[in-house]
Image (cartoon, rainbow, N blue to C red; front, side, top):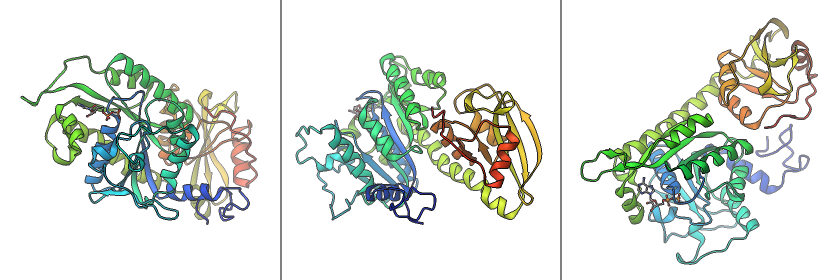
Length: 416
Ligand code: ADP
């Protein structure tokens, strides 16, 4: 199979499916990266780059192979934060070598390309987009456990193209500060991710409380907790809060990541606590998907396959999130016959609830009419396969059509 090919046979090298050589290269590069983490913020100055650097360093120190990509065209600060400001990457014919930092971390930044630190570079729109794409596809990232991407702030064209280039399995971490204005920006960032169909890993509240250099305790000098409230309100995870700490400023100014030298302060502990779920997520995602027997394997080997079909008025419901019930049908893979069917009422609809509930029902395959990209990626995380565009027919007929290889799928009519 030709990596990156879009066609169903997977081996036309773009001749039939129309994938360009760049598309193929991009897909090949992305195919070697297990987890893509995009660090976003509603506005600049909230500590997005500081958080991106420390997450990348913590993952690398934990033994993961990590890429750190700085596409913050307005102020690429990663080289400075890692004392790599004077480095220039080697640019070969078709490939750019990332700059190594320590044993497990490789860095690429627009900052490496700017001749003079004080130069203001005016990047025109299409150039910016092209650069972001080039930095993903042309950099020799190799096999990575994580690619951490420091995105430009806001919800404009640049974070949008970064997400589009990285694909819908790229997960966003949104950095905010506790103040109300920043919180409004985060609300926009979460909505933005939902609109483009990328899952949000969670929200980090930075500069939350003050880590006193004299006593080491964290004092709540201003308000805090806004990020947590907002995460709850928007149905996304709250990953933790990092205090305002003069050591963070010093480490940034002097170009060493705090987590490389400090593991005991309240700030270092807070940062490490945020990285922990990322590390376990890396394992659990892989394991969950691997745990589930592949539908085709079961069909070939025999066994039982459990299907779920969203239903309204007795027929497959075209709008996944609006269904009344789910038909759960067990199929004997050997005879390809439905051996049992029942209707289950799902829990009240809230973002992220249905994929988890369906996985808990032991379902292997969902046949749906329309489903948003975000829900689809949540199912993938749970190891449940999804086929969209199935017709609004009786659930058993839809399953029988699938088993007979006759299921004709149309448009995903509900892709939000
Ligand atoms: P952004 O990428 O959002 O523009 P930066 O990471 O460049 O933000 O951080 C902006 C400034 O805030 C830097 O001077 C940085 O050292 C400082 N900073 C970031 N996080 C903290 C923190 N937790 N405590 C103190 N200063 C911080």
